[in-house]
Image (cartoon, rainbow, N blue to C red; front, side, top):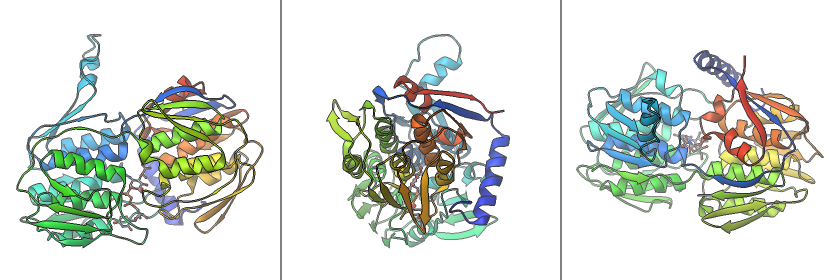
Length: 460
Ligand code: EPZ
C-alpha cells in the first residue's frame, strides 16, 4: 500500500476490522462545487485535552475542564480514567440523558476526581483504540509509584515508538520493564534529573507531556532539553501550574520543573484546536470561500497562514478569530512538515488536497512521520496527479477533481478527503468516517452550516 510497510498494512487492516466489528459503520456523501461562506466555531483542542485529562491522575482533588471537545478519543480517555479509579462527569449530557427535556444545565465541562488508586493498569483493550492513552504513564508513575500501560501498537501514519517517553521516565529514576506487551514502571519517588528528549525526528509532544507531568511530583528539579514547543505542551504546563506545579520555559525547547510534594485540583479551559482551525482555513480556500473562524488562535497558526498567503489565500485577523477568502486559482508551493512552530504534520494531507488544484507543481516533504501518505492513493482515485519520491511527494495541479468512493484510513487523511470532496465534480462517498469522529466534532454539521452539501449515512 502506498508508503506503508507490509506488516503495517496488515496491522491496519486487522485493527480496522476489529474496531469496525464494534461500531455501526457510517459514511459521508458529499456533492462538490459549493462555495463555503459564513462563520464556524472552532472547538477545544483534542491534542491538548488528552494529556490534560490524564493529569487529573496527579491529584486527589476534583478537576474541572472546560472547552473539552465531544470526540471519540476524549470518550476513550475518560473511559480509561474510569478504569484507573477516576469518577468522570460531563455536565450537560446528564440533563439530556434523563430525558426530562430541560435545557442542558451546564457548560459541557468535564469533572474528574480520582477516588480509588487500586488499579493502575491501562489495558490493551483501551490503549489499542487510542495511542494517546500512553499519556497516563507519567502521571500514574509519579502519583502512585507504579503504572502498567499496554505498549501502543502499529499506526496507519507510520512507526511511532515510545522509547523517548521511557528514556525520560528512567532518567527520573523509574524502573521500567516490558511484560506481556505492557510497560511496567515503578519508582518509590521520582527524582529530578537533566534529560535530553530529542529524537531522530526532533522533539516528541506526548513524550514531553509525560515526562513534564511526572516531574511535577519528583524530588528536586528536572530540566528537559529538546522539549516539544507545541501550544498543547504550553496549555498542559499552564494547567499543571494552576494545580500548584512549578514549571517554567514551556513553549521553548528547555523546560524546568521544580518538583512539589502534591498538587491541588484544576479548573482549566482547554485552548482552541489549531488543527481543526487549519482544516477549516483550507476548506474555505479550496472552495474559494469566504469564512470567518470564531474562537481560533492565529498565533498558533503562523506557519499555516504564511503558507496559505503564499499560494494566494487572504487570511485576516477579525473579531477574535480569522476571516479567510480566496477568489482565484491558487499558486503551487513547497512545504516541509516540522515540529512547532514549523508547518504541522497534522495539516500535511489537507494542504495536499488544496495543492492538487493549484496552478503548477508543489513539493510536500513529510519530516515528522515519513510514511504519512495514506491519503495519496485515495486522492489519485479522485483524479489528482501526485508522485512520491521518498518522504517527498510532487503534486501537479489539475483543473478539477472528480467525485469517487474513497476510504478513510486515519484522522487527518480522512479530513483531506472531505476537503477534496467539497470541490470535486460530482459525488464523493467516504467510508469509515469513524476515523474523522476521533478528532473533529460534528464536522459535517459545521460544513453544512457553511453551505456544503454533505451528509452522514449508514454504510451497510
Ligand atoms: C502528537 O503525537 C499528536 N497526537 C499527533 O497528532 C501529531 O501528529 C504529533 O504529536 C506530531 O505533532 C496527540 O497529541 C494526541 P511525537 P505524538 O511523539 O506525541 C518520533 C492527530 O492527528 N518518536 O511528537 O505521539 C515519532 O515516531 C495526531 O491528532 C520517537 O522516535 O508524536 C515521530 O516520528 C496524529 N520516539 C516523531 O518522534 C518516541 O518515543 C514525533 O512524534 C516518541 C516519538
